Length: 504
Picture 1: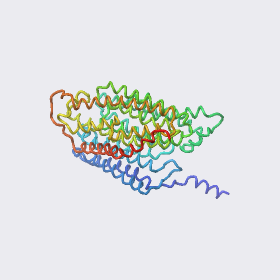
Picture 2: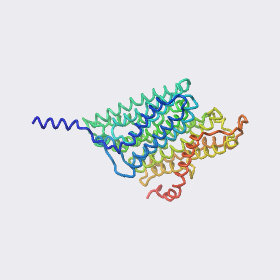
Picture 3: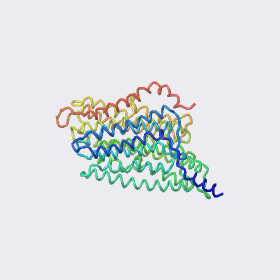
Picture 4: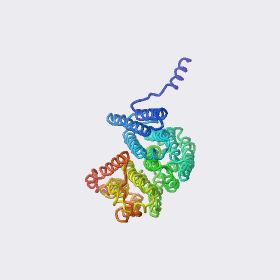
């Protein structure tokens, strides 16, 4: 009897089976973080440029196991289902790694010329990236929260990296305070879900939520838990009315970090929302559907209307990012009738949005090297002294607006395809109309910047060419290739699928 008890106790504390191949992307990233620290520690002060190269190589090295896992094709599960490496996770890990590599390219000259501490900067950037890769595989509330904090805490510090700048201080403090508040709200919602289901696994929560398990009538508590968790992640994706941190934070943070927050951090929030809605809340689309409908409609409309009045291009891109988040939230409103289409639409939009938005911020960074201004008026006559940058920015702007054959049109198309699926609902049709109207509104302020670049005169008459460092040029090339290829390669196929937008 005693022997069986001891054996049972020993089995309780057995070490979990760890699949090192599945964890290889994260392990390589951890190795890169350690190497960055050591290189910064032992590199002489004057040897700037080595640390970003090490960080970039570490990120690219992390892509290798992602590719080998994709070629293997097998789904891998660890820690009792809390950590899953499947096709969904691998696609998003690849996106996070590639976007982070582009951010390193954007940062190389910006950080070196700004006399910032390089080692700490890239250390925090890689730590935040590590949290994002973990988030892509998280299927458990605890794992998800740890990943969220791992990506958020370094981002708070990076947002306030310009320590001697008042706008930088405001950016860091506002992002931190709002982030802590959102985390507290989300944790309260998670505690309710755990109390009802007795488990932190998303699959167990999904089963309990669908059945209404618990003591007595738990429906109000389930509803409250779902709403609070969604609200917490709505902050991360800058959904209205939880978007107020974004414009000031984007304007005050270093421009490469602004791009990082606008793309990678937002994508991580959407990844968490997708996993929660598709696994844990799938039985409560009566709550999720209307909530997503309201959030999407408010977010795209408020973001676009405020973006119309902006005179600063960073703030305009911030409110544009708010509106784009609304477009990405829209398919989740019909998750109850078209779950597969909603997931495909959101992931496709995330991939394309990452490329075109990073490209837009790269052009902003390049132009600011000459104008030293983020005012839209300073972009007047850009074509006269930087025709290449003008063409690239036009591509990114019209892609954001959804103009064919650029990648943004495909992003908009899959959203309409999800909303107007064969199982048509009145809510889906109404939200599709809202998406269409907001797409037209967005085109106005995107086209206004194009007009400034192509038609207006140079404000100060200075037509000195813009000098673009190699790393910045590489970031621009990567972004524009992905933006164009996504759109052109899918053009014929998607127009052949137009019939799917109509009821059978």
